[in-house]
Image (cartoon, rainbow, N blue to C red; front, side, top):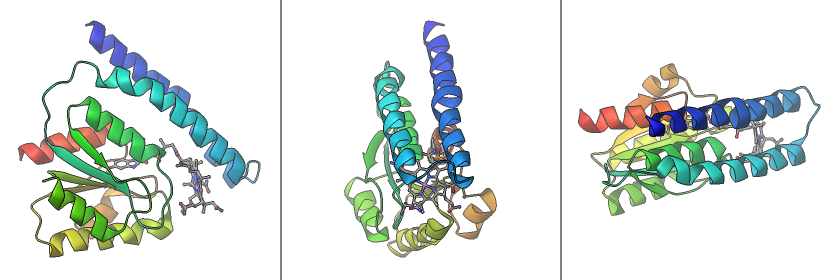
Length: 186
Ligand code: B1M
């Protein structure tokens, strides 16, 4: 019961406090009211906030549910959503190998092999870097890895995920965790 209300409280902080504020920053950037330095400052503040939430979300999980290799695809430097997915995966009991940002397809393949990953999770925030998701999934399939691929990020849709033959798509971090659970169980 106590754990349930803590999680509900953390969700409110995340969705209404951190993510809500970041959406506002994005809107103001589009309208020419904020610029890249302000987006960077907002990103730093968001990282600080996530750092505080992370240990609370991870509390009480013991047994590993398998390894998830995660990263933001080649050409893309956005990592807040990816970090959020990684944090929630850890909180749900997955072992997470985070490759960071601007990650080449070959690096995902290498890491998935080396860590015997069950899931490779790709994030992209730019329409221009969405094709790098396709390249990564193609490379994973060419390498013949028995790993599930999931994709997400603001411009990514279910239709795009289907088009590039990803195993799954989620529009948010909790959904990505659910997806990973289902794909591993299937
Ligand atoms: Co960037 N940027 N940015 N930026 N930036 C966006 C994405 C943009 C929409 C802003 C805008 O125009 N309104 C726009 C993209 C337009 C487009 O392509 N359609 C944009 C642009 C244009 C750019 C630059 C090109 C700007 C420039 O230099 N002129 C440049 C590109 C650099 C590059 O990557 N090569 C750039 C740079 C930056 C900063 C470095 C300054 C900074 C990033 C800092 C960092 O990440 N460390 C930044 C920021 C902060 C943003 C906004 C404001 C916020 C992004 C964010 O962190 N949101 C963003 C506008 C916006 O999104 N409102 C914007 C909060 C985060 C929690 O949400 O990442 O969407 P998000 O994650 C969500 C879901 O998408 C999902 O889960 C999360 C919620 O639970 N999700 C997944 C994400 N990954 C997932 C993976 C999954 C499943 C779900 O499974 C694997």
